[in-house]
Length: 379
Ligand SMILES: *Cc1c(COP(=O)(O)O)cnc(C)c1O
Image (cartoon, rainbow, N blue to C red; front, side, top):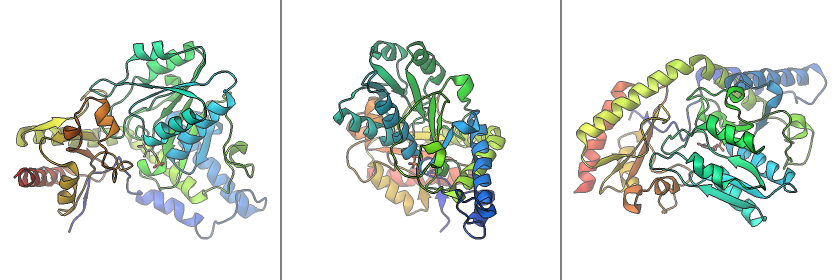
């Protein structure tokens, strides 16, 4: 059976060019980047080339990029790192209720360590209230961590406004941009972002590699002890092949950003229109403006989201009910709850996230299958 993949927010396929670029670093070019002989230097050089490409995607200096093991590690590193290095200055952190678990659970962990965390609410479109942010700021606020774009409903936050507010009070502003990178333009200089996370496998690169951008001049404590890799901030022999893959994926993402946006947005808008025309009781979750171009999230009244997912799987369709990170738990999505959905409607949701490989014909098949399965499940 042909597989049709509509879960590009969960992960993406490694592009062929990315894979080809990575392969030599598993075989002949296996030197340790810390070794001084030429084989080591080849690996070291590959890392530095990749660093430039990642920096190019978000417009920072290459020496502001730290390679990590994943997006989650990037979030953990900077949130804990800022908290610990600024704890004498204050113990208050501001984030939102709709963050990815990598941020949410890190903040909850810090609460146990004696930090105070304010979780900002969002409106029904999944956007924070800047006035609420302003009033949440205290004398001891050390960090604001607000995601760039949400992984479930695709809502895009007013990042430049948030960074302006943070700057006014001399508070570090971190943004989890794992969903945004490669899907919308990001310029950390222009946007005034102090720190940002991204992940290889969400932008057509490999799994197990992430990057953390931290603006020069911002101190943070490292959490891994060991060797001096990554400017002494992230110990451990580098994942050279992964880094090379992330570099290539970033380079391609930058080159093709415009077409990518246009492609997924066209499919997404077509999908939304078809669903609204053909399926009764379909509610689009989140707004239509300030939304990732490839994201659609619907609740289908009186349909169990997980049952729908399994029925679609039987037709070769990959999509998501809630986010991949929370699937397996029966609690309704914290994001859908935060935008005001009742449990019933939150449990009947389906996220469809479009990617480069999808075609209009795929969307027709998806809509047709949805019509059929929803009718079946409602009986
Ligand atoms: C996927 C994701 C992460 C985690 O990235 P990993 O590389 O899988 O650890 C963090 N934040 C958001 C918004 C994500 O979508």
